[in-house]
Image (tube, rainbow, N blue to C red):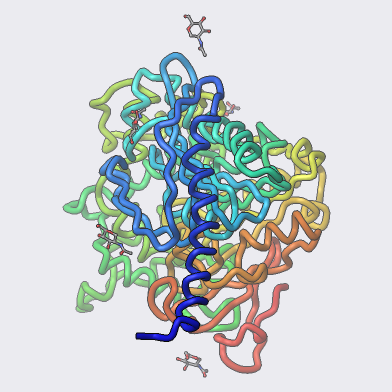
Length: 526
Ligand SMILES: *[C@@H]1O[C@H](CO)[C@@H](O)[C@H](O)[C@H]1NC(C)=O
Ligand SMILES: *[C@@H]1O[C@H](CO)[C@@H](O)[C@H](O)[C@H]1NC(C)=O
Ligand SMILES: *[C@@H]1O[C@H](CO)[C@@H](O)[C@H](O)[C@H]1NC(C)=O
Ligand SMILES: *[C@@H]1O[C@H](CO)[C@@H](O)[C@H](O)[C@H]1NC(C)=O
Ligand SMILES: *[C@@H]1O[C@H](CO)[C@@H](O)[C@H](O)[C@H]1NC(C)=O
């Protein structure tokens, strides 16, 4: 038997931990009874100890998340909030025990319909009192919009804003000290939601991190719809298999990879890349696995061209070159793009049988004219947000296969023009970073580990983490000059092969040497 004095410290440690844990837990479970907000119905509140693999049995199957690892001790509060007589959002607040005095809202993706539990876990783990909502409907389909304008209104702007209003009240109620600063983190549709807040509710956030924004939303959905008519079905002459896209990708890299000074498989500035695709048309006798037919070369040229409307106006810029391998299985797969087809079926035409294979340029005009609830999210005058002292950090992967990074540059130009400001002035409150080698919100061939989520996390120093960079900007006035990304050996969290500092737009990265492209000091923003 161990002597008593060996056991004592263990016992007292245990009981201290238990007492602290228990106080937070008790506060969590009794908190429910103190919530009395109009339109808010609390489903449950539960204490989740850090290290839990949380089962999400109620999460809609199409959201494809049946569990979530939770790293920090949190109080989880699940609610239903009425947003109109015929709509409601499902809202969760995750309040961490180790709280940093910061409030944060997460966003959504695609046309969903899915609480992003991985983001709730990420930011509550970093000490933010976090909220996340289901965007007014459940699951990834656009069908709930059908003849339900209130549900669409939640999706366009109201779900996030409602979650913020309620989340801030609950945060003040839960923590005696309230909160100091308010943040937003989202990508894709989440990026659009961030810009919607900036444009429509400029006081909702002190700092917004908005990635790969799905703004210019109506035209984005027309753009994603227009790939099918270009590629045709898999039996069509104009279609390229993923293997053929690899041939095209390699030719594009051959022409463009070296423009930035380094042949590393990564294009640092796709704007400088204007590939001549005819070079890969087969010569007589060449094996057809190594070259394209004329019809296929035309497909490559057309997907790398902008989308113009019926009268020749630019609706959406081109897909950036370099994303071919990621885009092939989802955008160029010989099927209508599901989100676009849903949008035309359930919003534009109110016709569940509308067939995405029939899409043509006239559909773009019908759709843009509607712009329900200004879901376009394309307003360019950000002076209210600027005057409120807000900061926005936006980033876009340069291998984004779903939303072209060229559209983020177009928005940047529109803001500069509308506000009469050159980049040096926009930098005071609006900074845009191009992330080479990053796909849609993550993944890709390059240094995409920038900490915009759990899948891209590589430490929490502000230099390597876009969210913590925003915190430092808002709270200390130190604005990010570059964003460091990690190139992971395998998936996120695996060893880091190299780092690269991504430049603030309109600068671009150039390899100056000496040394290897893996050396971040050998690169310069010019
Ligand atoms: C959590 O639980 C689910 C289902 O029980 C399992 O599939 C998953 O691998 C678990 N995750 C972790 C990180 O243990
Ligand atoms: C969404 O699913 C939740 C269960 O997770 C349910 O309580 C809620 O009513 C559903 N919302 C809608 C709009 O169907
Ligand atoms: C709900 O319906 C009632 C009665 O039709 C109406 O007066 C009220 O304004 C509606 N509330 C909302 C939030 O739409
Ligand atoms: C051209 O089309 C765009 C998009 O449909 C529309 O906004 C614009 O007003 C049109 N311009 C003219 C001159 O008709
Ligand atoms: C640079 O580093 C990569 C990865 O370690 C290596 O494959 C490549 O050969 C190096 N290039 C030069 C020029 O040293």
